[in-house]
Amino acid sequence: MSADGALPELDPVIHAQARLRVVATLNTLGERDEIAFPALKDLLGMTAGNLSVHLTKLEEAGYVLITKTHKGRTPVTYVALTKRGRLAFEDYTKAIRALLDTAGGTS
Image 1: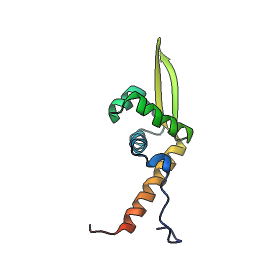
Image 2 (image 1 turned 180 degrees about the vertical axis):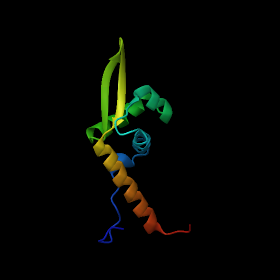
Image 3 (image 1 turned 90 degrees about the horizontal axis):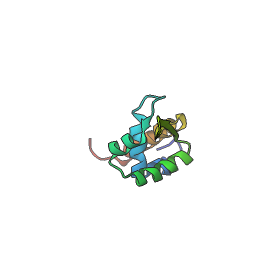
Image 4 (image 1 turned 120 degrees about the horizontal axis):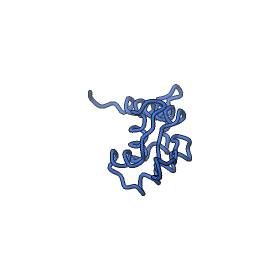
């Protein structure tokens, strides 16, 4: 709980299961690292369409950076977590931990 006794707010952009998986996966990369879209799709076991929809939401929130370029003549899309995205994920994980701490239960 926060100092005022309220339960922590969970970021709705990250909280959707698929987007949480995307952000958690991207967070494992180095701060300036990026991953090719097909590799991320395969890693997460998502369809290209589904991943695209979730990446668009994350991009609109400023949490991911999408870079479209070419390798020779082949178009390539790279995905990276932004600094804002890393901070949002850090805040999200703190809020989840705080929420779970207030839930009690046995250890």
